[in-house]
Amino acid sequence: MMTAETVFLVVDDADTMRKVNSSQLGRLGARHILLASNGAEALAVLRARKVDVVLSDWNMPVMNGLSLLREVRGDPRLASLPFIMITAESSRAQIIEAIAAGVSNILIKPYTANDLAQRITRAMSRRPLPRPPVVEAPVQAPEPVAERRPTLLVVDDVPDNLALIVGLFQDEYRVLAARDGSSALTICTSGTPPDLILLDVMMPNMDGFELAERLRSHPDAGRTPVIFITGMTDKAAQLRGLELGAVDFVSKPVDPQALHLRVANLLRLVEQRNALQQEYDTMLELERLREEASSISRHDLKAPLCNILGLARGLLEGGNLLPRQLQMLQTLEDDCRNLLGMIDLAGDVHKIETGRFVLRPVPVDLLTMVRRLCESARLTYQAKSLTIELVLEDATETTPILACGSELLCFSLLNNLLKNACEAAPDKSRVHLELRRTDCIELVMENQPAVPESFRAQFFEKYASHGKPGGTGLGTYSAKLLAEAQQGSLVLEADDEANLTRLRLRLPLAV
Image (cartoon, helix red, strand yellow):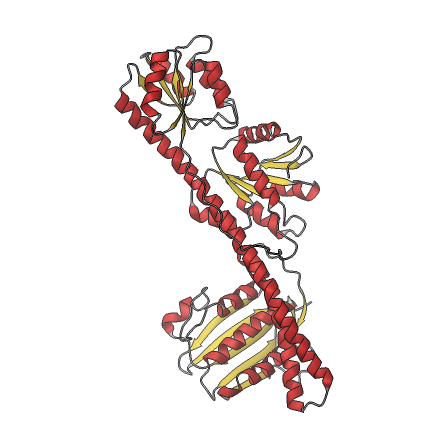
């Protein structure tokens, strides 16, 4: 939770906004506030100093907020750092992009110190867990937020005028009243300022212009829209009001119908902004629930797999097995171990999709891996009587063929490609693999039939499937994703004349 010792980093290219955010944090009790004018500068600060929370604007030169977020999530030391994105953007696609990149919370301008405090509290209380959480009760969707009526502040020193305007709006909105500028200033600079101010100009002690000027310099009240209600008709007065940020002028005596329409239009915009913030809060909450459910599922799948692995090991150690039984149990044991690794891989795939994955490459023996996968596929698909053959660049190849990548990613990638080829191949046909070493490691895999021309453009798209009842369309999608995550490539080549589908995989050589 936030304390006086919490270290904040405020990132914004506008000096005014850095000051506003720093002022709001100071009012919340923060004593340690670091500043940066763009993402690159912020990244340098994060790598040199301890920071507990980042508040970053979205649109900035050099490096924007989204790029900064991705850099932070891709750094193991900073990956769990609470990161709040501050934006005036209303594009749903951009918000989805920020959520996918791992943003902790999103705050839409304009906002108050209370809004900021709530987002900081949420962000700091929802750091990624080091292991799957223990669930003691069913996961529930977030409770709907009660409908909030916009708040209108009416400021006038004449009681009759005040009563008239309050009566005009009190059935539709939450209406506050103030008879002088000082009282109005107190209300507007509280933690919950009004959504719109109807302000008389001519008042004793502090007139409407002075009040508007004070409001504009306050971090919470500076963005509250003001409608001046005045008997002044000269142009100079109106220009001064506009300079102070007034959104409209209404002349006395007030036309109730015209004033009602103006207020309704402005508050409709306020309601839209509030609804947008609520929608983004809900999107973030649902994403958090989805990630927790995925983590729990991966955790729960491991237990039965470990049991199967233990049973296979027990049978292997028991002896008295025929050679074929021994081979099948060893294959079962290997596949169980690999499946456990693939469950862990599911979290990495999400990181790859969202740009948060960091590859830590090691030498991977593809020759041994491909041979094992081919042997496993022959057992799995023996009912189809497939011929699964592996041809090497050197027919007597005995030395490892080493690629530079991740063993788990390579296994999942190759397993998906071979599985898809065997499932697509007709009974008694051939699945042909060639493994060669040039300036990279290249694996070419062929099977019948050729992918239909109409489907080739969608072949690697997520959820795209053709000719496989119940197919998820994730095999080729994830294979291409995993190849590119290892600085490799995967391309489709269809040979219509020979009726062949050919996949060409390239991975970097291990140095």
